[in-house]
Amino acid sequence: MATRKTSEPFWWLLFAAGGMVAALLVPVHLLVNGLAVPLGWTSISHARMLALAGHPLVKLYLFVLIALPLYHWAHRFRFVLEDLGLHGWRTPIAILCYGGAVAGTVATLWVLWGI
Amino acid sequence: MSEPRVERPGLYYPKLPTTWWLRNTNYFLFMLRELSSVFIMVFLVLFLVELYRLSQGPKAYGAYLETLRAPGWIVFHVVALAFALYHSVTWFKLSGVVQVVRVGERQVPPSLVTAASFALWAVVSIVLLWFMVRG
Image (cartoon, rainbow over all chains, first blue to last red; front, side, top):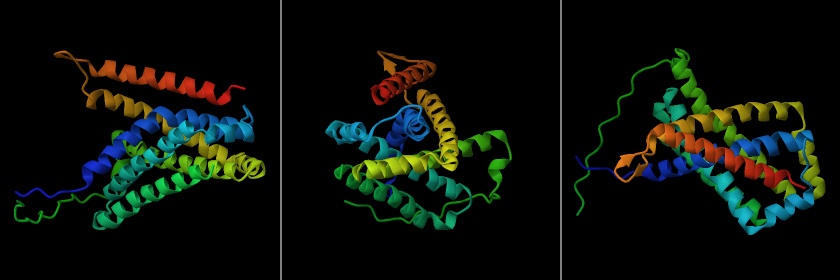
């Protein structure tokens, strides 16, 4: 049987990397940036946050933190939709999910570039 | 040299009702684990918006933090945190099994790989916490 080349391994690799980044880094950021700072448990001033996010290494970190888990979402959500019975929509679902992750990556680059 | 292309036969899908994952606890937990990625994604998009507002100046940044103080967003972040923790726990438990680590001829037991992952998670979280909240 002839093997058909697919882009599956490429997306799976991004999924695995994104899942690892999400597992290691996201909970603490959710706690600090999603709850502690808005609720006033701790404060990160605009100047300090700007200085932090302006550092090239921190920018690289933020890029990895935000962009990679988007591919983790894309991969999982794609198969959730298929598992819920949307088999007839395989291709549009894949394009929408992975396309969304790529768009998010571009948006992340754009935002970080502007800081 | 490429072999002649052979069309793949159509994939077979068993016909299941959309609610198959409500049938037992394991299916339900599987679905929760998959859906955790949605909450993580939404949080990261919110965080990206915060960084964008940051670049617009102190006023815009302050206004955005004010928005995040709304009860709805706080509830969202609490729920998202629970999902994120569930993702981390299931991920590290699985990675111990998936990621085979060998020392010489011997395979490191999966439970040890998982334990090491949890330890790494704790250290990374504490370092980041310290880095973000200090003065």
